[in-house]
Length: 357
Ligand code: UT7
Image (cartoon, rainbow, N blue to C red; front, side, top):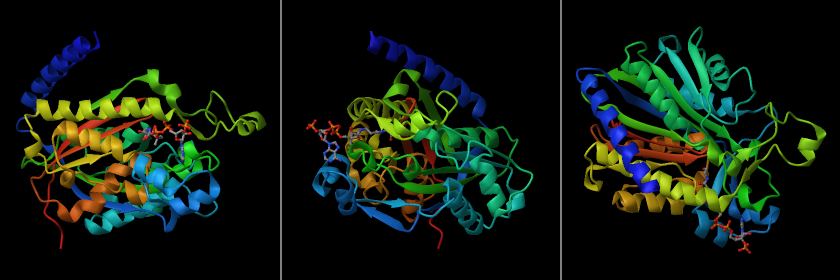
């Protein structure tokens, strides 16, 4: 039954894809013309976590692949502080003036405030004035949803320079007495610049999916309009992440592998054509399963989970930042993510530039 529905969906998606490909011909695509990142200085190691909860380095490493993560310290320091550092470096690296930017999208589930948005604060910090900016929440798939949104603005011809940020301060919503979640998450920010391109490089395709049936399995229940902060919500620890690890794991393994295979199939790509898989960094075992389904070896998988843990919306741009010097113009990348919602997504990107000296 499920397989039949999957086949029907695939046929429907491929049809829409072929139609949009036809109309896309002679059109501009959105090229990533620069990438930057920022991670805080403080390193929280597995050894330090052993002092906080009943866990050990061997368990964390073998079950997740994580060795350490970065934590943003300091009163009043929110997600936008890290994101602004990444964006400021991105502007400098790409020789872009703040006034040239048309749009800033920040994917995050840990904005500094409900409002103003983190993107408003980023713009203020880096001197981008009177420009479109907004936040986008799709948990761990946030960056891919934001990338797709930014790409569509570029493809339409409406905007020429779009900054897409993925940033999260997960330490703000982690319960450091809960060993099932506190070992997983870290803080960080990554950003890319999107510009129009007519040479055939840039964002080639994306698939975005969500299913609210998964909402109870991974969520921060308190603090929003359903359960505004009260003494009771604090006592019940509703402001922290709660995750049913095993059920999320099962969905993540199949959905991330399926959506990566789907985007490869409809773009006629085999494992050999792919230079890098750029996976969301939630668990090394999920990443390995996705790579194996795509038929690509581990040397072609971007991996930095060991040093940053799961930074939610920041994992994919932080990978691109770490591996930027290994990328060449024309390289085929498959980006894939799975997270709260549930949300899952993939993108096929042709890298747009050679390593910058
Ligand atoms: O990015 C958003 C999407 N999130 C994900 O993709 C995460 C998906 N889930 C996972 O990555 C994994 O489920 C976890 C890493 C969260 C957990 O790994 P697991 O292999 O699924 O472990 P488990 O939950 O089945 O727990 C196995 C055992 C349990 O003990 P018992 O009941 O067998 O005695 C846990 O209590 O391990 C215990 N355990 C720990 N032991 C030492 C759980 N956390 C820890 C810990 N240290 N930190």
